[in-house]
Length: 340
Image 1 (cartoon, rainbow, N blue to C red):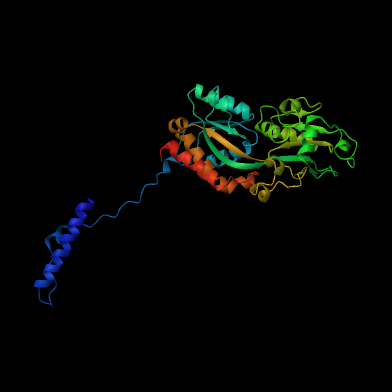
Image 2: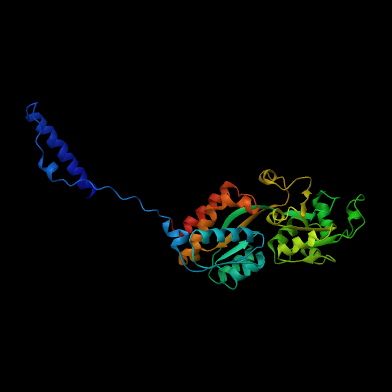
């Protein structure tokens, strides 16, 4: 029944009742009007359909391929597991290969649907994406406080300055007593992510600028490099004289064997990340494209699920929530991409 017809019937009923009341004795009930006698009962309106139902985990099929940052890996892995628990029956691949390698797979080979990144995409990588017809779409998912760590057996260092970190990781100093005369005269064993890692890129930018940059870090004598943060964890825990750095989540997983150092006297925690005083805080991202989201509903559904479940999971994973404005921008980018 149309809204116009329902309105007409309602008015007809009202008018007939009024006229009947005016002409009938006070003790008689008003006669039933023809319109009132023939009008069908108004149907109860069906509940409004949920416009997001098509993006429910159990409403989509097809595979999803993600690859990139080892730092973002724990977040994406958690979301993939939850997505499957909620009814998604396809396959989700989550490869931890480093941010740079992830962008190569996404922008050069065009093999992945989502690229995990612990730094913003570079202009050169955007151009590579565009060359294969992809326009990268950025989603901010969290904030990481890069953890500088030593073994729990290390009982002599609790804080380092950015300058001291630059000296250590460039090889300007090679023994702990050169960092501070009160420290033991033992060789510093250095562990660092490899050059394909976004964590490496960030550390170079934040720490190594005045100490020879990327070349100095890669040339650091005796240093061990790996894109696998678990390898770095094992290396640092193996010696009281070792030092390394990686995403905060990997420190959280190993608090029984690792100690996170203060940097410039500031502890890596939620408050110091939010107020901007911890000097090694950085944003974390995932990337896709509007075309992929439109052509592969399973990818659109996964990213929607990912974003809307961050608040309940990000701290437990070991990272910090993105600022509210950044989260809103990510949701707006998703809505625009899928045409909502």
